[in-house]
Image (cartoon, rainbow, N blue to C red; front, top):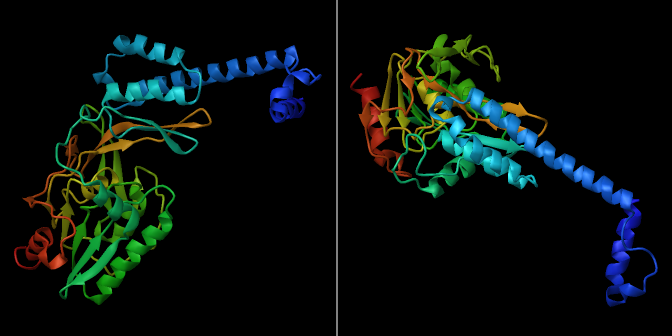
Length: 362
């Protein structure tokens, strides 16, 4: 039946102005119209129900749900849901809810693509007025690779970029780990971990690669809105566990002392998973932070399926360090040093300060 209708349409289009001479009926049968209308109505109702289900989960799981007067915005959301016809119409109520939560770390994905997100920039939590150069964000997270170098005789320099969806996570983890071990073989005994360009993504390959620099035990955790610890991040046999979950197991490295001196470099560009990695070095003996306060996306996000096509990823807890200090805004350096992107390493004030601490002041 669909082929017949399509053929008729093409035929009429071909005839153009002569269409009135065609004897075949141009309208599909009434029962086909009714079936089509029913399918459209069913699809629209399914979209509306999917959004309602998403909002129920959003309200239940968001770290910031107690900050929202859900009763007061119910009418606004229901009107936007009532207006839904197409898939695109679903974005509006979802983004509206995220805007009320003021959660810039939140996303909804549809068919594995970002679909709806926070849009009221300037009203986000922990608003950071510092300038962000988008060209730096792009170059150092999407174009550049990690960088490893021996500085002098005994300082290993490690720059870790963000690791994002679609990249080979195991390949990244192995690369970081193997280069760490190679620097150790060349004589590295202390370390500079440069996270200043790290815009996040997936923390698991970063943590798997850097595992030898963290001793077994609690290295971080998660806190609820009240500041109560609700889960721990652990190192077990040199592997990283988010609560009880290990994504990338790697062999134990015995040649790198887990209590070696580590200088951690951070900046306004250090966000999300970059901040999570930095958190695991907070409270660690023989670690010191240099640079700027981080960018302020210090929240754990979930990955919740809503139906078959929609994924909810929203802030559900704050980062906390091994000493249960909760980071509900950002991470602060021990030594404040202005960030000057793309300087030569021998001219970079943060690298110079970190190296001096490692060599002379510790």
